[in-house]
Length: 179
Image (tube, rainbow, N blue to C red; front, side):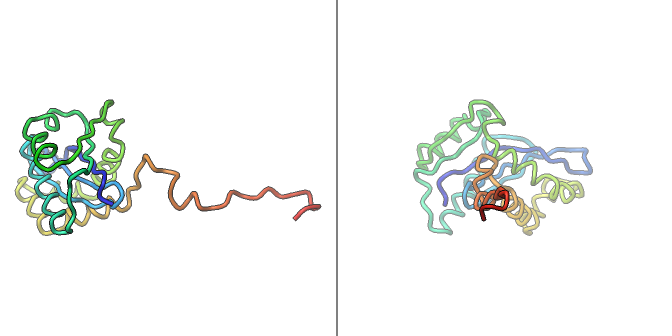
């Protein structure tokens, strides 16, 4: 349930589109759970490590050991930084997986970000500061919307492997001689 995680940064606007913020969420592939996230005005390795720290706290609370888990992301310099690699790989024992073709190699996260942006953008548009947007998140409105988006967002790599595959194909009608 907790073996593969995905992450990436995505851009949001706030102050009615006059400023931008970066959200980094860490999502479980099977559980669709958001283990951790961070919101900041720029993409930076410290923001990524804050999101990871939140994810580790979630794992601790759930009694889950993160050693051996896989973290998949693109080859952004944040994910190649000594701080990120040392924390996840060396200190926490997480295996790192890098996309070799950008967003096309991280379709799960790109799909999540696309589904998520619509519902949450209106909340952030009204925020005057990134801190205010963060306060909304701490009150739970963003977290609930992240979770709802993840649950409603199937893994694009596994499309066609869900309930729809359990349906029987339509039966051909015979010429009346056979049932």
